[in-house]
Length: 407
Image (tube, rainbow, N blue to C red):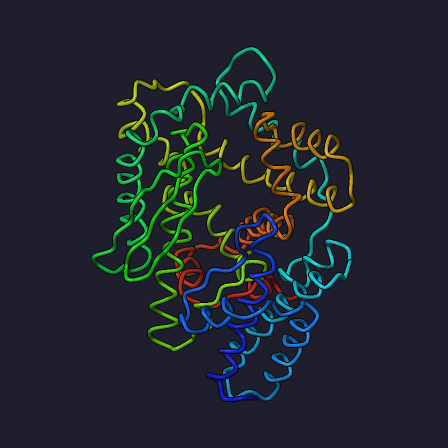
């Protein structure tokens, strides 16, 4: 292979060039890049490289890993990442493989149609977890969300201090599992008009921001679910700790080039969906919210079971996976929307937002990372020394195949 530094430069350039094609296709970005500015400036200043040529560049990088003077585990990780980028480049060049095959090549997991019995079971759990009342499960879920929500016109004023409290508590509990550095700063920013729920961004230098969409109400019963996912022990903690453990201590510069349509992000999203339960087992999240947030906001206990509701939310990401398969078959919008509404119990506004995500280039693939990442970690974390495995998730380069028992 070329010198490792040259190979890593070419690896970063490939990711930046693929992202340049995909970032303008309603996805925003498929790359988290913290590498040298000179490399990103080089790509910004050049003519876009044709996707077919990018696929050839990926092949050359894979060839360069043969016999590379790198640790075998690192070679295996880099190989999986480059294969994902090669598949994305081929897709951009017009290759039209079935979505499950594309997902397997990019994400390193097998995806397929999930039986509706799984969702029926989730609906039954939700029925038991919601307050008693008239109406369907979907109507009662909507009423439960409304009863715990801040309207958009209150978010800018009321939500940031609540997020700050939640960050402090999730960070304190995460530090009981893995040491966190002193001096970390996590801000909350409300993004006016945005419809996403939350996004955690580690900016480097111990500074991070949790972005909250300001164009929709915010369910305070989900405060810890969102903050733990986006912050600690979720995305921000993972980015911060891997920067220190992998980049600063071991010099693994590829960690600064994180292509999202790849195996590592299956694990990241699985960790995010398990994050609240990791640091608030059982009903601890609900008790903390009741004592520190909900009572102060005049929201009285209603007999609901937050932990069960959040588990159902994770299960119902499987509906999104099935809907992505339907969309990939060019099923009509009303059919895909009806499926989401029926099984994911989404409102009309939520369904329209979800449909837009499924139709966006690349994002239908990324949606698989949620359910399949959550399910992958469900079994892997079910061990007596779970904290040791959480530490591995936060500090090691792992692939889905590392978490799957050998046949």
